[in-house]
Amino acid sequence: MALAREGTIRDALRASWSARSGLDARTRRTEKARRLAPPRRLRQQLFERILREIESEGLEGLREPVAARSRARRVLGRALEERGAPQLSPVERDRLEAELVAELTGLGPLEPLFADPTVSDVLVNGPGEVWVDRFGRLERTEVRFDDESHLRRLLQRMISSHGRHLDEASPMVDVRLADGSRLHALLPPLCATGPIVSIRRSRAVPLRLDELFANGTLTPAMGDFLAAAVRSGLNMVVSGGAASGKTTLLNVISCFIPEHERVITIEETAELRLDHPHVLGLEARLPNVEARGEVTVRSLVRNTLRMRPDRLIVGEVRGPEVFDMLQAMNSGHEGSLTTVHANSPEDALRRLENLVLLGGFELPSRAIRELLGATLHVVVQTSRFADGARRVTSIGEVRWSGEELTSAELFRFETERTGSGIGRHRATGVRPRFHDRLVRAGWRPVAPEEEPLR
Image 1 (spheres, rainbow, N blue to C red):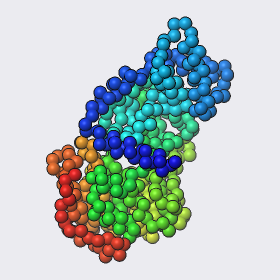
Image 2 (tube, rainbow, N blue to C red):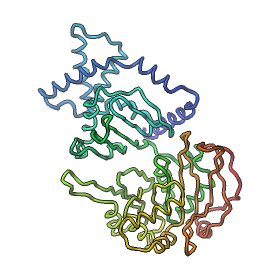
Image 3 (tube, one colour):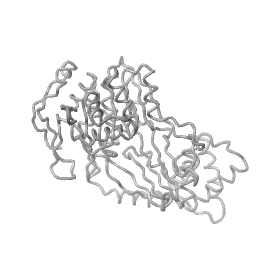
Image 4 (cartoon, rainbow, N blue to C red):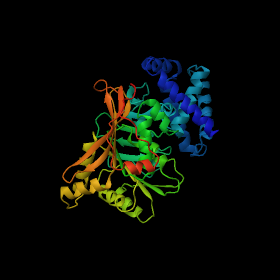
């Protein structure tokens, strides 16, 4: 059954991808909303009636979706039998019933967006404006909340199970939902348009390397290089901007870690889903309302060294934990991986240096660069272009010349025009200093020839 579900989701993704450029998404959404949307006012009245029942009868019957649907059907049936009630078609009645259940136990108006496997991000800019990210491009939807209190009620239900709350005294929250999605929310007065919500969805079926080949993210030659780099135990940094595919690539290449090795992941909010038999996932914890109980990424990195890891994977470094991670990589934990926000490989190396300095470590810049040059082997750059395409734009070897820390490109992506994801990947022909190590791991060097247009 799991395999059938996975195949169905993949078929939906492929169909949506192929149809993306040929159909008018706005027209489709408008027609669907006009055909299926029941009267919003009626739904609001019915939900208020259910809330009044809860006050008198308690929460019994709302613990499970099936029981919640039964109560919603009962309330809906009584309401439609009253004098002056609107006449609804069977389709509208089923739709209204589903919306009531979503209000009681699910994600309310956002429920259809979470059922769509092509949606990677859900962005709520107040109660009257909801956007989604499909294949790297933003689209405005017809989804609306009734008012600000409707949106706040949904937020409170989504975060309450995590022991968090959202109000004027604590107007920010960052939590991981039950399905692995990451939710970040802000309340006024931090935002003038009403509550703002950003949800980065977790894929039901993680991408595979061959799917990245098909999408043009990278070429088989680049994939072979990264696979050999992981198998041979090279330390690697994946760099890129927001939503450029860093975590996705990290997930994919982690499958090449030998199965006999013990892997520990450390993240602020758990997003990695490694295809490996021996993985332990650690997650940082924010302080509570009393400013107590915080567990930082740095403290987790330091404690992980006592847990006998073969490799460390730090989801993203953005603070003083970078120094402890570099120390671990340089002291018996080779083959470790991490990501960093940066616009180029050179910027990534400079950012890592700056993070060490900002962490309060009194080290000269030369010593930090020397540590980076001795510890890191490969830096991979990912980019998201204006047309939504995501590409691995550079794979380079980290080199320390005694004065300067640089990245010698081994593969690069050359665009046909600025801002476009159409272009060519090609090998540069540079021989990495760890060439023999890669060959022993099964790598076969490629000639510096251009790949076909993507």
